[in-house]
Image (cartoon, rainbow, N blue to C red; front, side, top):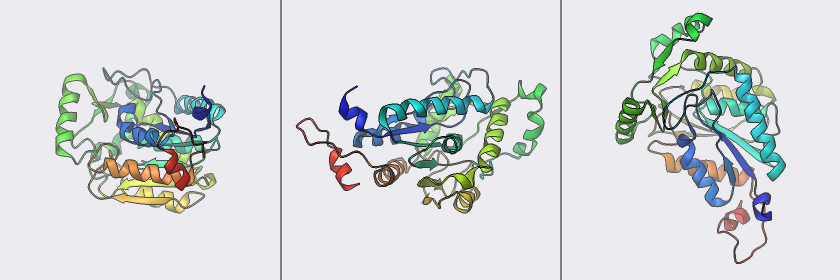
Length: 282
């Protein structure tokens, strides 16, 4: 590994439940452009295939967390400092990871500690029934418009992709009851551990989030071990990383990390990439 690469701090980002790393692409690209090493792992039974929408059998959330820990440990061995974050349930997974590993910073986008957004169907109240073992293995729930997107052009594209291939950049056309059951267990696990999480944190959330209302943000502000930096977005829905304000979202994440998880000051050479200017001002 080249020495410049090994000096660069890392960022580990997790996509949402029954989704894939495509939804994090704008944020990951922005961070890589300034010099961070960014990984957006795809974990078996947590996400779905970006090509077919197929999901492997859903394991207990502890398996997801073990995979997240292995990814963190690998990055930490190579790069020292690792910031963690994610979108939706990926942000919840990042919080669980930060309770077990020394995360340098937390990036929490559209965090979902409560499924209580304005587009959440009344059937959500019946979820405990779907979690019963016989039903859990067979039931799934269809995703519905607006698919977390305020942008009508993107929404139409997602709707077409889901109809033809059962998957899109925002995830699968259906959420399995097994996945939602493990997500509910993960949420309970994390909510019990919020006060012990004292890493610098940034929270990005839409005021009109259709999946998770501002209640989640207020809980993070009240219960995290260190008050987070909060940014509200007014022209997007749940999929902040892809919606109308995706450029501002990526910039907000980048600027926060440049302050709280700064790039190493590298020696100036003719081949030094342009991002060193940002490092000097971080």
